[in-house]
Amino acid sequence: MYAAVLNSWPLLLGLGLLMIGNGLQLSLVGIRASLEGFPAAITGFVMSAYYLGFLFGSIITPKILANVGHVRVFAALASLASSAALIYVVFVDPIVWGMMRLVTGFAFAGLYIVCESWLNDAATNETRGQLLSVYMIIMMGGMAFGQVFLNVADPGGYSLFIFVSVLVSLALIPMALTANPAPNFTASTRLKLKELYKISPLGVVGMCAQGVIGGAFYGMAAVYGDNIGLSVAQISSFISVSIMGGVILQWPVGRFSDRFDRRLILMITTMLSGGAALLALYAGETGNFLLFLGAVGLFGGFSVPLYSLCIAYTNDYLEPDKMVAASSGLMFVNGVGAIFGPLIVGQLMSLIGSEVFFAWIAVAHIAIGLFAIYRMQMNRAMPMEDQGPFVAMPVRAGAAVATLNPETEEWVNDEPPAYSEGESGDEEDIEQTEIMDDGPALGTNNP
Image 1 (cartoon, rainbow, N blue to C red):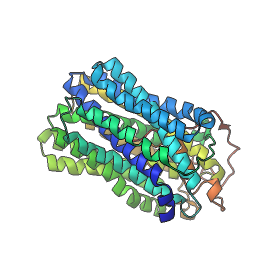
Image 2: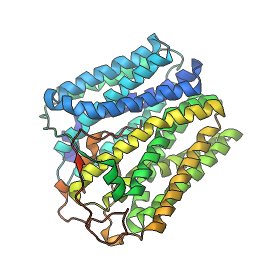
Image 3: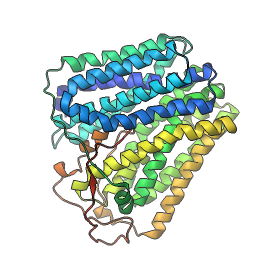
Image 4: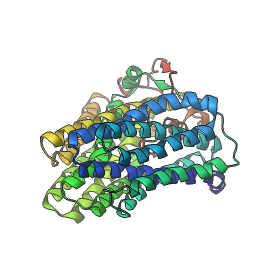
């Protein structure tokens, strides 16, 4: 593992700088929008544009990558993201900001695809899962660490936007100077939504709902914090805690899901996340910040693993040669859901008030739990010996991250039985699944 990480250090260093810049920009734009007097509904449109751009970037970038090459694409997209970060302070207008969020989402989708395909090429059968873990830690750790820099300067000025631009530009240096050969790139495919839903209704519904929730939370959390009177330091703290909670509890939740009915763990996890959201609502309204931090940490800890749980649960019903296509399809569904999250919550916050932020998130989590209970009544549990291992996946990653899963066809010799959760649960062969070869799937980063 250490040799693989050392060989990939330019890529991982560049990724870390990108994630710090992206994490800082995510909260900075939300806070600055509130300071500029943008209504929550308008800010919701601005923040959702990032996820829409991510969708376009996930589809278009692989076609460019195949013709231009990894280093050039990385340099072009990093320059695009760096430039976009400076436009916010030049034109303080929600339409312009929405366009810049669209551009930023497009650029980061492509940057993630470059990083993931490069890591995929560097991975071996022994180091694949370990590199995926390092990748996830750097992505989510960088996002969390980026929140710290909100305290370096006044969000009402221009210094932090310049700092974001500098961080993204610095990410170019290790990538441009790397001596590692660029890998060959093959675009991912994804299963049709109809076939994917037939295989695992819970996986599809859970991933879509998790996307809506994640997009709403990370898109509007800074706006919510500013509206309830939190300081910039408090906003940066609670967003960081939510991200790190997801990192810390990812593996314990996964271990439980390997030992029990994965639907049961998914149901319990989402209900606990909904309960933590209600506790955060109470703590925020009463001004108990320590309780608020604890509740937000639990919320992130139980909400973030839902992404990996849904992928693992769906993979339980698939042969290894279908896992990449299915995971890509699920990431696409998740990314589409993320587009609508800020739109919905922004409108509700404008109509009802800031308190609806965590209330709506709690209701959405409870709805997932109720659907999981419904699916448990419809089908019997899969035998434990037939479940595949839980693999922690970074939320809002690029489309190519599905190929890093050690369970996929290239890295697995023993094929699990293929039967559909949407059927009776008996070990029947599912019909040959049609695969869409229309570009990779969306897996947008958090944010």
